[in-house]
Image (cartoon, rainbow, N blue to C red):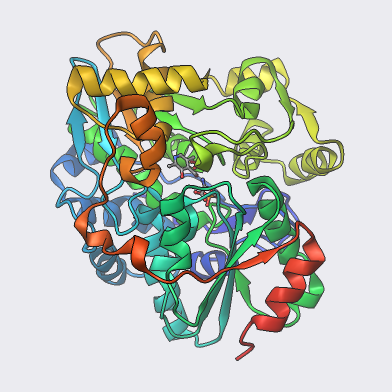
Length: 468
Ligand SMILES: Cc1ncc(COP(=O)(O)O)c(C=O)c1O
Ligand SMILES: N[C@@H](CCOP(=O)(O)O)C(=O)O
């Protein structure tokens, strides 16, 4: 191994940065997303040697080429040990076999019961480490459709020099998700419910990063998957699963419940680094812009429809820009022009050439009935209670047509107890919250409800933020 990339913007007009600055910056100042300037490579021999590593050691091995510009291996190991020490399962992201081909990868053993913890526990440690080396006040602004918010808040609540403002769509997340955020009363945590959709919240967050009134006053950073460090941590579990199921000597496929295209882009990154991946199923719910884009080139927005898989009720998928950048030959000017057109017109077309370059991705769309029947099927056939997001991907996996000799891993992205009403409706079983979550329903809640107006949100942040 190999080169140690620095990070460039997908829109080609922001300075390239080392890992620490990329993490602390979040979104590039030209509106683009940071990506490594090249993909580090692992040889087949190196991959074979990685099979026996523990999760933490594997994380260090996979991530260190990306972090070497700012962290030595021992520093990275200390941060990973702290982050993954808070998981309730020794394997961190254990695999559960369903049948001869299908597996679930349980990504919900972290403190807030969703896959977001895998990245956000580490991101909290990274922020702490970089702020200790270079003390300043950091203001995090994020948007959540339910899971990123609680995981990010858990990662930074009570930390010195960090304050977090988290926007969620009012009334459109589950009660457990809301309470996991609003019952954290640490003074550095501010929950904002906006009278709009997740897409509205995410658009406001991106606008804040390019608002001179905010950036002139506050050092802002991101906890959403627009922050490269989020995706980096998620790459690791693709290696973990594939190497346990015969990789690199046989290919493995993954089915990924998809909204913002972050998790599945992490799988794509693993493939670019040399991990043999047969296919990445992009499983959407009826908010299906990604399905349409990959199937017939139609990336056009429509109204977001609330569903029982609320975390995926997304139409504008941030990380799709990272894929577009690669599909168009990593030319920032072209990606910038394309994204500006999309931001104006709310639509774009993917040419058949671009779609054929994206053939690793297999699009799938699961509706409410299919989602519900898959939850029941998983329970009746395997005794597995799965959450609605996982069910969407498992349905897509079962109907993927992927050859039976290829292990197929469905990412179980949330604990079923986060979506108790939906799970009960489909299976008759009401899952209980793990004991470590404590008395969530008895705790006091604190949040601010704001209209779906950019100025209202920006002014609230400027008025409330501790400017150090
Ligand atoms: C439980 C759950 N599953 C799947 C997703 C979709 O993941 P991504 O946005 O990375 O595509 C989300 C939200 O991000 C989620 O919270
Ligand atoms: N489903 C997400 C939406 C935000 O996605 P992110 O991965 O970009 O943070 C959520 O639960 O908030």
